[in-house]
Length: 250
Length: 212
Image (cartoon, rainbow over all chains, first blue to last red; front, top):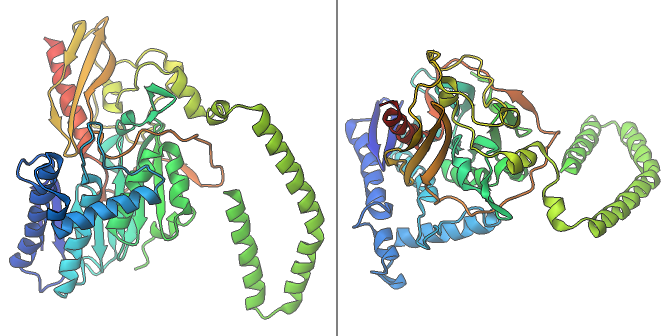
């Protein structure tokens, strides 16, 4: 059973290979994403994050999920040497970069708790997989060519990991050398990170992309993470354990 | 960083030998390692001294701009390189020698027809605001001599990172390869499409205006 909807301004796909999955199962997952969107969307006047940014509610009034997310953002900022930062130029908070992976992770936990073992959830190209596909094979995850959206340049076989890709050819435009602020760094096109789960993969992919071409070294140093960086010339650099994921072991 | 690889190899060798229960091999290995210690110390001290001298004589700003290819490019490139789909239908920006072609695409995008030069009317065109989920993307395209000369960002989402720069050094020990198209027959695809789609939307709009 598979369904795609547009939520939070992106395509969200849930595919469950277990035969016991019903429409209600899928609905439950989308309901969760809807809840997250209502709470964390900076584009919604009524969301909690907007209320916080407009100083309409005090810290003591924050919901539990908000407190959790803000604490995780703070933790990630420390772990990435400040490269992950939710404070925007105008001083407001935008935790979108963490909420995406966090919500995919929580949604897959909902499915696991309900006894499902074989599924994936894909929100805007960030993916959590579990078990096997409907043919009984390991899930295959393609890495999109950042220069040609219709092309896949790598196929990964993952069992219960998260796969997140950060960047685009132009995303580099907003990373600047503080010593030459008017010169954009445009050296990398995308970085894909495979991690223990999508929450971990997504936050470190985001931070690694912000580091530019050094991002792949950052991933190399992280235990349990592998990465595939594509630079602006179309050359890919991979971490030492990356290739274990490029072979199907069925 | 290279030390990490060295250490890993060392540990691997040791455990492989030990795993076989072959103490002799291990002893020989340790002896060889011990004998090398003096040589190792010599190089270590030399390297430390050299590094200290290096730090002493070279200012921090120079250290951070060690001429890696990307750093060199960064300081000299003027116009941002356009996205490949743009590059295919329009001439490259100025200083082509400093902007290597962005893709050695093995199978190029769906056959863009080579268009005659001078297809656009000179001027600056502001594209539509396109939602990239993480924020709004809006570009300004400048056309000179009928060609797309530059694309600049009027709006760009800035939620994800701080503005920092790290010295980019090559890491020769990490494996590299050129991109190659694979079978698209996969269950699901990972990629960051949202922002680039918004970019293309905004740019397409700007160029549509330039055509009239």
